[in-house]
Length: 177
Image 1 (cartoon, rainbow, N blue to C red):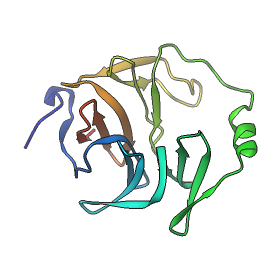
Image 2: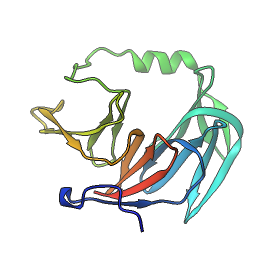
Image 3: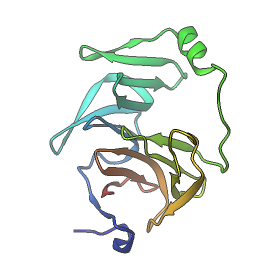
């Protein structure tokens, strides 16, 4: 068993089920989805990845609202009854531009919000940080804490106590956190 994360930090990572090379991974409500270097989406059942149709996607996400994806032309899709259907870009645009955003310190290439409200980011340098101090009076939190990793990270997703990680080499790690 490979150990990829400092045990003294309270986490242990082992290789998860592989669909090599993974590019992006997301976990929500006990489900895990990913995209590979050919831009195909996969869904994890047990220890086996299953391809989700032939639509090519650069990003796929799973959560309380179901499974959604973004294709290579930035069009948004929702997975419905075993296939992807086009989601109205105008509606998505309006939802994405509502006022009320609070800028948070730091720079990142991706952000992940777990189903328990945990917030993680990946930096351009492949480092992972978790936001601290998030509560009802300070919803944006107060500081970042780095999570030490032994290699550069390209993507993370958090659900049910597991931090799912994709390394720059395309290896999937499942970190108990």
